[in-house]
Image 1 (cartoon, rainbow, N blue to C red):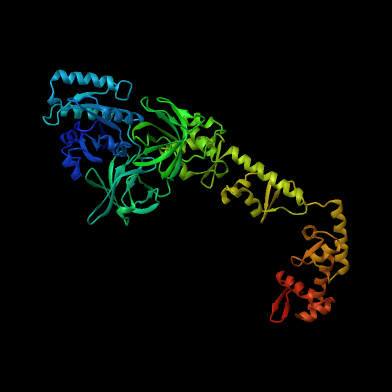
Image 2 (cartoon, one colour):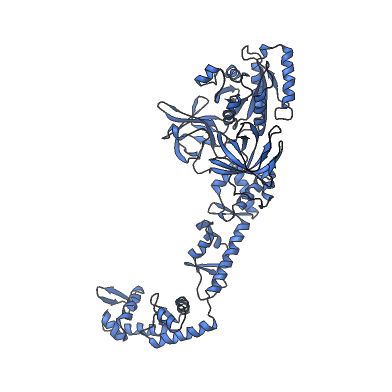
Length: 625
């Protein structure tokens, strides 16, 4: 079964709803007030089933004050049934609706001349010619024009044939993209709970799927699905769907929300876009505020024109739209802009980047051309590059571009093969930024080695803190890519670096060694050595660590070091003592070394750690012989 969404368009009281009812037998006017007043106030829905084809019909209001409701239903339309009454011809809302359909990028449609039974045939022919002039230069130029009568049934079969032919020729929405369903209705059903409806613009959804309502972030589960009044297990792009949600209140949701699978799309309050003004619109100044309609959502936005102070009627420009409220959008989505007052349609555009940085006049303009005319590969490369050191998460990248996931994966695969991007922990980095990170790491390590020549390297956490924008796991993976960067336990250094002493430090090193050898079993602590030789404690610490690394000293604890010869002598004394006795007290240990309790205790704790001795109550068991 093929699914296509058809939207009605046209001036108020030109017979849109009556035509839908004549074609389908379904009255799209569901509200009591609509039936009483005889006009469509809100969106109405119906479906027309033809051979191997289901056409979901969205009947939209034509009254000028209800245009925002019309826009809520126009986003998912594949083809438009443009309705013009034979007894009135082209009217103001006819023009606005056609402009909106053009701006939304709708590619196919049919014009129905309704109420043809109310006028003579020659009047119908005049109206048909008027329509041909009216649609010239739009997507409806050359489209079928069918005079019909909802009352008598005249030409309804012909219209159905034209609808079938046009629908079959349209490009199908893809079931392989990220699932998105912009919500246009929210209601409750007794015994079922909350139900939302909308047109699935991409992807697929199934019963029991875990889903998310954006921008609120409410997570819930699909209890049931209906499509065109039939219960289904799965729904796909191009279908009108009613989704029964589990554990969500009606008041928690509203038109303009979007139903998606969890963690696939992120809300945004900024859009990079190309906007185009209608020829009939007034110019707009830089930083003007407008109403923005995207999908079923509506908010206000400030238009930041790029290097322009004014956009003239009929012209296009790159702009950043800064939104008052978050919406859901992908690259390639269409939108409409309307004036704040008086409220009328002035233009529309296409989303180039739904999650851009704040743009400034001094920014390089190269990205604009890529987003406007580049292929998907070029756009994805630019987006990954634009995310700088943060990289771009794979899941969010699929939710950025309105494309099949398979197509996105293929484009990313090409970028990886060409060596332009790298994937690390499911995050994509542009190689320009990988090289930048590498260059900065090397520079920071070189600076650290120059400043602290005795240190074996910089701590991982200290280096990590200099690159807070980069994910921690990705950061250490990047470090591992380069041979000239070496990781040793908790330290990182350059491969060509070796701790070294200056001539001054060499002299102090010799004096420290002599002092520790002379003091034997009563070595001065680090703080005492620093004071003795008038150096900073950190410098003393660096020298002691270096001497220990060279094997000339043995580290007892953070403050206490022994000469290697004295240490070996201590081990020999213990072994000799163990020939006659396998346990030793602190007092005995102090006496055989000729030292004090101040040193005996840290010496024994060190020996415990080396498993030379083992503490048992107040004594030490000697483990070596």
